[in-house]
Structure formats: structure tokens, C-alpha cells
Image (cartoon, rainbow, N blue to C red; front, side, top):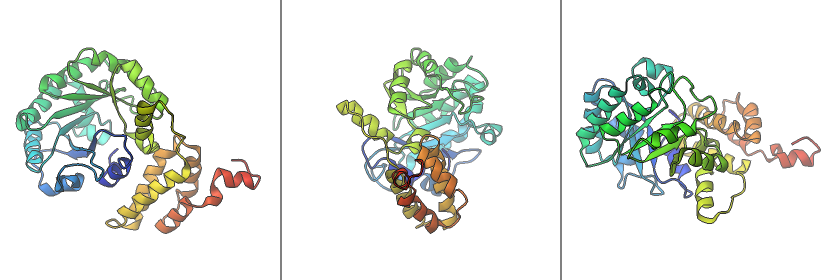
Length: 323
């Protein structure tokens, strides 16, 4: 999710009620206490009170690192800047991150997970909650429960579990039943994560894991209305219509309009393609648009193509072309 879930995306995804809370992209902690400007870059919501999206959805700050003392120093820095919660990332499977002893690399040694969580918990005390995210281990699942217990022992108030090991990456399926094994061993709340793309996936993940809550990542980018769809179904029992291409295009356009105020057009083009790449895996029209737009480098042309109604399935059917 690095490079995608920034403050602009958090704003757009929370405008319609659905999410209970959000988390920033990870702040990489290595060997020093970072200056305030780094925190404000990753979490500009810290500049306002409450620390929330414009729609009022709380934003927690995510740290990624391995050295307990440095994590503690940065947690204290974040607390001083107004952070309302610290989320520790032990789930990132990226090879570069893991080679530098971050993310899921700590899952090979559960006591290191406990030491990292404990250091942050001790640093902030009871002022704000400390939460964590793990996977089902690094190369295999043999230490999945041990890592979860380690996070709890360190003082985590809540644990998100992605239903794969690091070596499994994002290859389906997510093992939601294994999240249930972890949940039954812990006293703290456990949140299920991984491969929740649809309302049916949501219910299956909850059923197999026994978790009350789920975390959406890629699924929320693939369908920006997934969280509202789930919330609406839970409230009314009614299923909302599928998200149209026009709605997706409007979201991407709103995203571009805000991003181009501070970023160069070529960067915004890249970010839109990155988001559209997430959409295309679960939507045929988004896939078709991505293939047409992936070589466009001009932002205005790209935005025009997003809204070209001649390219919709309905227009192609009217012209006698296959949808």
C-alpha cells in the first residue's frame, strides 16, 4: 500500500460512511528519531484536531522498524505531535524492506516482535493505544500463533492478521481459518485481513476467522465503495448496486485534482495508473481502460479518456460492438 494510501486517498475513501478508522502508510524507522516534518508528510492530519480525515474518521500513525530503542524514540515523537495511536507494521512482505530488517522479517523471531511492541508501549504508556499487524509467519505458519502471542505480550491493544505468510506474498487464497486459530489464543481483539474484495468475501472472512472486524487494503482501492457497501448491508440487509465505471472515474478525477495542486503532472499520472491497476484486477471495464491508458503520459488527456462515454459498455453495445 506504500505510495497509494496517502491523506488524499484517505479523504476520498472516507467521504461515504464505511470505515471506523484508518492508518497511514508506514513511517520507516531505522536508527534515529525522525524530525516532525517526516510525520507531517505521512500524516498531515496531525496538523489538525482531531487527528482525522475531513469526514472525521480517526487516523492512526504506522511505524515500521526493528530496533526497540529507535521505535520507542519515534513513538514518543509521534505522541508529542498529537498521534492518537501507533500501529506497528510486522506484515510488509517487500524484499527491500525485509532485507533491511523491517516488516515481516521480524516474524522469524517472535521475541523480537514482543520487544518492539513492548518498547513502543512503554514509551507512550496509557496515553494512546499501540496496535500491530502481522502475517501468518515468514516462510511457513509454524510460528504464527507465537508471533501473535508475542505482540499481545508486548502490550498490543489490537492485532490485525493478514492471512498469508511473507513467502506467500499476495497469492490467493488468504487463510482466514488460520486467523481464527490465532483469535482463539488471544485476549485482545483480532482483525482479519487479506483478499476481502466483495461483500461475500467479507462475510466468509468473518465466518471462518470468527473476527468481528476486518481491515481493507487493496480491496478498498479496487472498489472505493466496498466499505460503504459492507456498512449499508450490516445496517439494512440490503445489497447496494455494483460500483459503476463512472463512479470509479469520478474518484480518480477527484484524486488527480487534489494531487496536481502539489505534485507534478507526470507524478499524478503515475499515481492514477497505480490506483487503476488495483481496480482492474476486479473490474472488467477498469481492466479495459487500463490497457488503453497505460501508455498515456499527459494528465489532461488521461483524465479525458477516463470520462470518454463512447468507451462505456453501454455505448459499445449501442454501436453493435461486444461489451
